[in-house]
Amino acid sequence: DIQMTQSPSSLSASVGDRVTITCRASQAISNYLAWYQQKPGKVPKLLIYAASTLQSGVPSRFSGSGSGTDFTLTISSLQPEDVATYYCQKYNSAPLTFGGGTKVEI
Amino acid sequence: QLQLQESGPGLVKPSETLSLTCTVSGGSISSSSYYWGWIRQPPGKGLEWIGMIYYSGTTYYTPSLKSRVTISVDTSKNQFSLKLSSVTAADTAVYYCARLLLGRGATTLIDYWGQGTLVTVSS
Image (cartoon, rainbow over all chains, first blue to last red; front, side, top):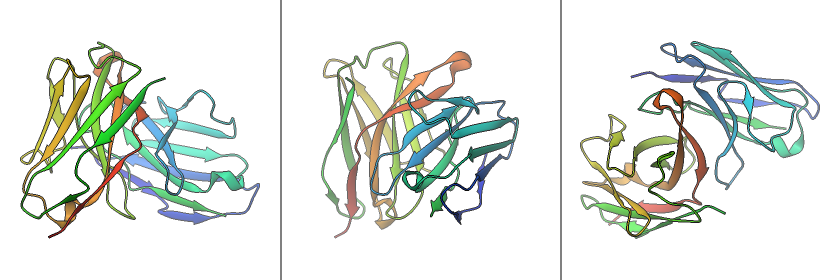
C-alpha cells in the first residue's frame, strides 16, 4: 500500500509569512491528492483537490502543487485563522491513506 | 443541505463490538455519484481512513482493520453502518462518517464530513 509522508510535523510562523508543507507518496499517484484543514476541535475541511484545485470558498492565499509523488501546500500570507493541522490524502484508489499531519501555529 | 449524523454508544467494553450508524439527510444514499465512508481520529492524533461502501454494497477497507471491520448500507433508511469487532483501548477515537465523491477513474474524494462521535473503549 502507498504511504503518505508529510513534513514538517509542526511549524511556527509569523502572521504574513509564507508557509510551505510537503507531502510525499511512496508511489506515484498522478494528481489525486487532497489537502484538508482541521482547526482545533473541528471537523476536517476540504481545501484543495486534484493537487492544485481550490475548493469553493477557500481563500486564494492557499495553493497546491505537485504530481506523481511530491506535493506542496502553500499559504502565501499566514493569517491567525489559519492555525490548524493540515493533512494530505491520496484518493486515487483504496486505501485512501492520510499523511500524518502538519500542525501550524502562530 | 446535506447532513450526516453519527449515532451509537459512546462507551464500548474491550473485546466487544463497536457499532455506529450514519444517517444521511438532504441527499440520497442511493446516488450513483457517491461512496459513503468512515474515518477515525484517536485523541490528539491524526486521521485514519477506515473504509467505504457504495449503495450497491461494494466495500473497501483499510488493510490494518480489514479483519475486524464491516461496513453495511441500508438504502431504505438512508443509513450506513460501521461494525468494528474485538475492540481495544487503541480503538478509542472520534469516528466520522463521510460522503465521498466518485470521480473519473473510480477515484473517491471525501467532500463532506459528519460532526463525529467519540467512542471510548474501556471497562
